[in-house]
Amino acid sequence: MSDAMPDFSKGACYLNGTYVPMSEAKIPVGDWGFVHSDVTYDVVHVKDGAFFRLEDHLDRFERSLKGFRLTPPVTRDQMREILGRCVALSGLKDAFVAMVSTRGVPRIYGSRKPMDCDNTFIAYAAPWVDVIPPAVQERGAHLLVASVPRISPKSLNPTYKNYCWRDFVQGLWEAHDKGFDTAVLIDQDGYLTEGSGFNVFIVKGKQVLTPDRGALEGVTRRSVLDLCPELGLEGKITPITLQDLMEADEVFTSTTAGGVMPCARVNDHIMNNDRPGPISVKLKELYWKKHAEGWHMTPVNYADPDH
Ligand code: PLP
Image (cartoon, rainbow, N blue to C red; front, side, top):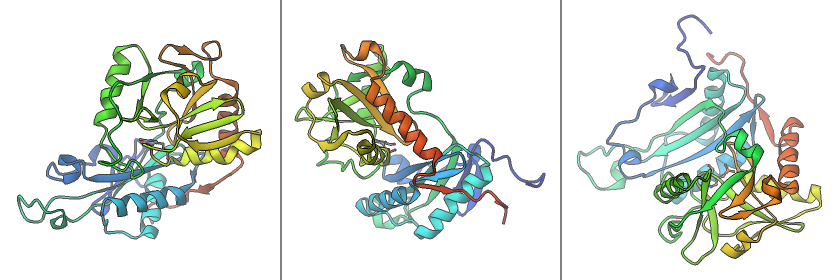
């Protein structure tokens, strides 16, 4: 990097066709992404200098774009190149890397028509951070089943990744007010869905189960299901009731920004002597071991990010 290069070490962002440090990345207040939450995104991680399941994240991003009728002005190949460049500019070896498309600002002032907006493409690489802090993962997270139900999938398809977090944030307030680490939400029919930024699993004997509804089709969730057979476990996507959750042998959560994150408590249900369960720990270890072995990893090209 030359002396004139901006400092990208705290994150690099692609915005309006140029690369800027994260601290300088801003969107207009009139963007529908901001005023109407009319936006989609995806987040992939980089570990030890390589993307994990990049094509799976791009696939899901494309499904979300289609679902919300967003058309960013870049091709999939360009997205891949921009994401790599953000990481290379930042020099980060462990990062979370976001791709975002907002509806944009209407070309005609005051227009209420979504077709009057030019959709954006924004991307950034930022230093890695765990959704549940490592020390909390170590002792086992304490989950609260929030009293607010998950927003109906009839109103918002949860498989399209979105920033409509009103229900999650309400759940987080309740969890923190009651001394819990984070919250999970139940749907209006009493079935387990997911939490703010993670999928949920329960363990029952050798079965590792995750909800079939109200949740994002997590890439980490997919990875856990792929890895189950290696440990002699049966991974399954299935309806899970509140009672199933409260009677689980173990509970863990999964996300890009944290991997497999064991829990020790759900409400007043204390599991495994208030510690992470053995199967959750094994899955967590295998998940990271697979990373080290190069499973689904695509190395970032850090050479000459200024090309
Ligand atoms: N559910 C929600 C609502 C999320 O926001 C996320 C990730 O951010 C997940 C689940 C986990 O998905 P993934 O494993 O693809 O990161």
